[in-house]
Length: 273
Image (tube, rainbow, N blue to C red):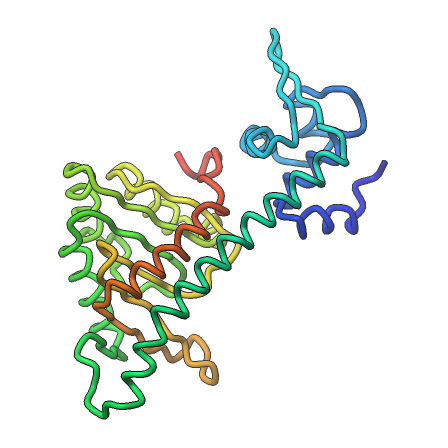
């Protein structure tokens, strides 16, 4: 059986990454493969295949058999497809919950905006990159329990972002949480990967997603900083919103969690060490 693009694409549509799809389609060819064998047969880099196999085992699409050299086998295709469909339904259920909660939280804000002409004192509109960077630094300094971030270029903070490193260390010492989701594009940027490594050493948990809807920072389920790219001017013009509104922050936290659950851990590749 060849690894034709249409079959790989079908599995990707059901929630697998392309590497996961290629490895599963290779595993169904015979009873068992070692990690090295399946990496060669599927055309997956050796340093990535262990993460891919771990992901397939966690999703109950692959079975690992211990031994002097561990081997891996695919579960029957009908069971695998049923499992993927169940995971997709679970994801849709979470998104339904998030969208309903978000609509409920935004409805009173929208209604207030129809009846009041004065600016909303809990919303700050930022258009200058310097002002956005300063507000970002301020949120990092103020975070007391939790800092959640969608990271995508272009970045407004200094490359080193020492303010963020200090915030992550302080949060983790206090038993708090610091999580960030980066786009896959970051894997090809040496400077960004170095920053991911430095934040990881400070205590930040990070994952990667193919795309992110926007840049976002949520602090303590109360403060939100997000960008609003100009749909006409594109990335050349951006407006950022700083919002102190717990209800909205909690809804966006649910959205963050959905993306986090579907994102991948940092690949074990030489560039990440």
